[in-house]
Image (cartoon, rainbow, N blue to C red; front, side, top):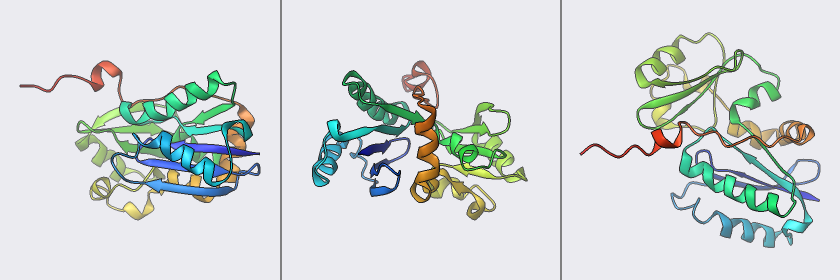
Length: 206
């Protein structure tokens, strides 16, 4: 038995995990249209491994934080599979530091619209801050900094980008530890967007 995995928080990550939570296949797609093609890509990877949804243990996905448009793709798949009584479990990227044993630090990501998302791993506090505040906060840190995937633009704002720990890479390199924890808690978290829908789709000023 196996698990299907997707992550659309940044670009598309698609994979198949074994019952021991080892990668059978792991794919990253940076094409801008990849989220629109995700259903096709899932069908393709399942056929490649002679699988279908009835042969899966369930569906695992990163529920954020991310953009509204990107996150709705994985959430839509989750809802369809739940209707078919397939196990669906999810997590937030900022939970990964604690899962791998590092509960101190700040998880961040670029949230577009000139803002940055910050999660304090010790206090669980969430903030959306300006670029100026982000630069000061992140460069004054004396504890770990985490983000989901490498971002060359954000890296240029950080004094020591090589010290930033990528949670997306941890998912890739240590799937057993992360996914065994996620499945054991049997939790389906709601999608977490950088901002509410009414703020996300504010009409552009003329």
